[in-house]
Image (cartoon, rainbow, N blue to C red; front, side, top):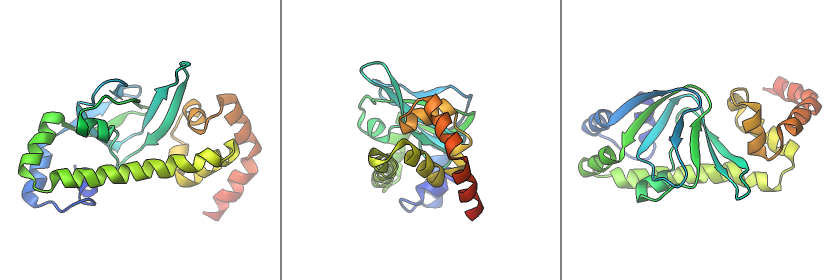
Length: 199
């Protein structure tokens, strides 16, 4: 629970009483690898904060191709906040790619918190804006990068995630086939080693 409270306090002040209310409104859930937290065309029913594990957000193109948009690791919410807040169907799926421990707040509990925490709605809007900025910062640079650059930059930005994500999901994220990513990795082995010695 401390991880969630610490995260929320980045976006607003919470009194001990308010922290207690949040703790009472939050439900711990353990999810196995491959569980869905959110489905496209449906309105999210709860906010889930990742305490341990990784989820991926993905969608299907009109041609039926599965595309991974981004990954969410510990210390972040893994729910479409805009869809949850405004009651709109989301356009993506959220799936666990490792076993996960989460802390979840239902829609009714979220609304109840808004009645007792004066800054709750504003806090969540700031949190939502921060999350959207993070997503843009992750995705935008990739638009002008080659596959090799996308792979290397992903490794630099998220070194811990790189070793925990299945190769096929990582390939989907950077926009190449699994075999192409394997080839890129083989060709860049000396670069990996050189960069590793710098850290």
